[in-house]
Image 1 (tube, one colour):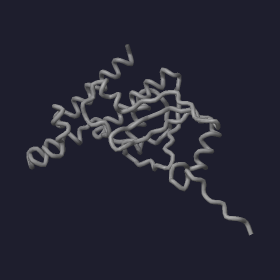
Image 2 (cartoon, one colour):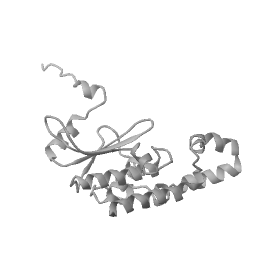
Image 3 (cartoon, one colour):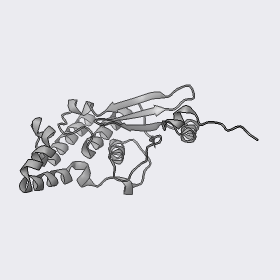
Image 4 (tube, one colour):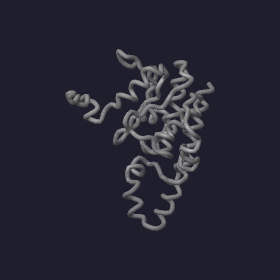
Length: 194
C-alpha cells in the first residue's frame, strides 16, 4: 500500500495551483499577472522561470493618481485605465503578447480583471480572450456609475452622500465620471503618441 503524499504547503494554503504553474513555466510565454487587494490593483508582465519569475514590466493602480485619475482605484473604469497604462509600459519593454494568469482566482465575465485586460489590449498588447467576456463600453467609461449617482441624488440625497462620501470629500462628483474618464484616457493616449 502506497503512503499518502500530503499536499504541498502552498497548495494547502490555497496559494498555488502547481499544475497551472507547470503549464505556465513550460509554455515559455509572457504572462499577465493581475492581483487585487481591498483598495488597489496591480498588473505585472512576467517571464516564468524555474528558478524564479522575471518581472518585465509592472503597473499599480496608485500610479493612476499621477496620471490625473480622481476616482476610486479599484473601480471598473480605473482597472481599464490601469490596463491601458500597463500595456503602454509593457510595449516599451518589447512585450507584444501575453497570456492572462490569475493563479487560483477565477476569471469572471465583465469583471474588473476583464476591464484591465481590455485596457491592455487597447494599448496594443495581444492578450487572447473572447470579446464576449469584456465589459460593455458603458461600464468601462463609468456611464453606469454616473447614471446611478444622478438617480440616487434625486431619490435619496443622504444615501448619495454616504455612498459617495470618499469621492465627494476629494471634490469629485460621481455624475462627472464619464467626462473625467474620457479626459484621463485622452491624456494617456496623447502621451503615448508624443
